[in-house]
Length: 176
Image (cartoon, rainbow, N blue to C red; front, side, top):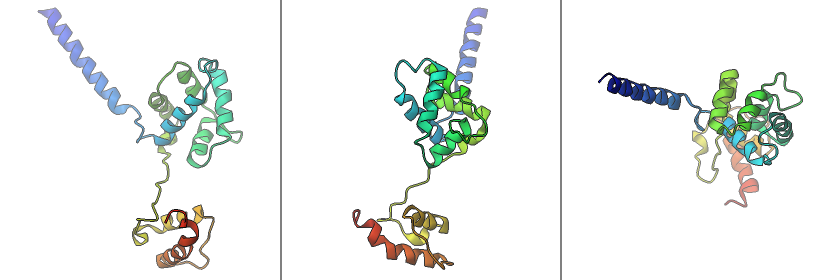
């Protein structure tokens, strides 16, 4: 009877520990830039590199040279860029050399630097369907910035909307 209780207790504890691990693991939506970059990077690795942490670090530095925006910031945090102030590349390369999944790698990275999972991709705005009046000024500025345009003298939200409406035919002609 005692062994049945031990087995049951072990099963309950195992389920509890698995549940806690599942809840605490870095899901893609919680750590989207990290998981995306680690997955993308790991798919670029040749078979002869995958098991050597030093080679993985070297390849990651090459990979980072072509990154932009949030992915570049992720590379900066890990030490994959020349201008990076610190480096925790070992926390990426060792788990990858063990074939650890991207979400688990990001979970380990988050423990070293919480900023890693704070990175989020910018939401894309569908200009064909969006009501510009419902957007924030920050989003309106981003639209103009993406077009490499400015809004001289714009103060009010309506000024930004007017400028976007003026430029829309020029930048949306292929999509309309």
